[in-house]
Amino acid sequence: MQLTRYLLQWSKNVTMPAATLATSSSFSRSTSDLIEKYSRFSPSPISLRQFIDFAQKSGNEKSSFRWLRQEIPTRLANMMKEMNRFPDDLLSTASTSLVTSWYKTSFEEMMRYRDVPVNNDITENFTETLRKIVVRHRNVVETMAFGIMEWTEKMSRKKKVFSETDKENIQYFLDRFYTSRIGIRLLINQHVLLFGDSADREPNLYGSIDPNCDVGCVVQEAYDNAKFLCEQYYLGAPEVKMHVHNVVNEHDPTVNIIYCPSHLYHVCFELFKNAMRATMEFHPDHASDVPPIDVLVTKGHDDCCIKVSDRGGGASREKRQRWFEYLYSTAPRPSRGDASRVAPLAGYGYGLPLSRLYARYLGGDLEIQSIDGFGTDTYIYLRSPSNEAIETVPVFNSTTTEQYRRPHLSGDWVAPISSSSQTKKKRISNKSKS
Ligand SMILES: Nc1ncnc2c1ncn2[C@@H]1O[C@H](COP(=O)(O)OP(=O)(O)OP(=O)(O)O)[C@@H](O)[C@H]1O
Ligand SMILES: [Mg+2]
Image 1 (tube, rainbow, N blue to C red):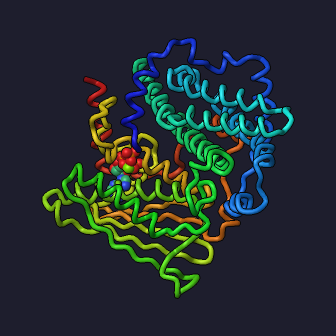
Image 2: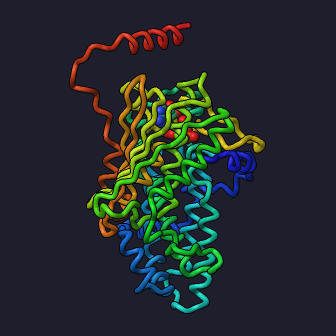
């Protein structure tokens, strides 16, 4: 994650006057009613095939406008209702208030198009509004992360500890919140790129989707950029050895699928940064001669798979279990607001959880197998047939409410506590006594 630029801005955001930080209680009656109304609609997920068909054949700006003026506020409202389930201590942090205020403003802007007749002026304004929404929400990921950090600090000042239920709820919420954001951004980007300024369009892409995405090329680009970063920190980087195997067409030396290359790039870049850092840290005395990262790219009839294998020492199952937790990182947290630094290689604990969301969003997945003392294999799974790569997006309903209320169940197996966790526990209890 590249937070440095944002962190500078962050220091400005927190000093904004309180009046600009709307909270849910400051919603006007009519906005609240509309949020309530739209949150009862269910989002309508679409497939990559539908995205492409719309862009290539059937789509025009007016039909896109008609669909988005319903779909975007529906997705925003579903998420706003879910945020209302937050504990007050979290809702009232400066960062969380900022995020809720962005959602509210964007929702209200969408409402302006609710009942208007469809004509060229309106669709032009609509595209401009969508652009503004993208800009307004560009720092949502980091700001929400700061909201959680502020909440943690608040809790520790009050000498409160997070319960297991709190921790599960944070993970559950952030997964859904960020997935919803990925989806809304893709919908908006498709519209803006297809019908907005043609200068923004990239040749070969339909919006942000590539009907012929060369997976190997995207992997190579992600590797090159991660390598560049790694060399700045470690004065060296592992080489990559890539094998491409197309099972569907043995004569094709490449793997091409319909996909959103920016999503795939994001995931691969994060995995390479992790693999490189682990490799360089595990071989501290051999910066110029570390084991390579092996990559296997395959295309089967149902799945396209990218396997990234490093020899960076891996981790035990106990540690590995925490890798997908937000804010879990074994790297020192990069300092705030130092713009002169190069982008950090690690330290926010967002790389893996977000990458898994990107993969899952279009019906794929991300899995990890680690061997303690040896290395790690990470598998990215993507859907090969584009009609099966369908958005997975959250909906706010009674199951969601139940999920937040559900108490954490303690285990119903009795197992001896390992000596290492016993020592850790002892250390913690000694600390709290002193
Ligand atoms: N290939 C790997 N080998 C060894 N440890 C790994 C590997 N991938 C992830 N980890 C461990 O999992 C932790 C979480 O990874 P994650 O990518 O989510 O966050 P990060 O790399 O610390 O920070 P960032 O958000 O900047 O990516 C890492 O700090 C590291 O301890
Ligand atoms: Mg990382």
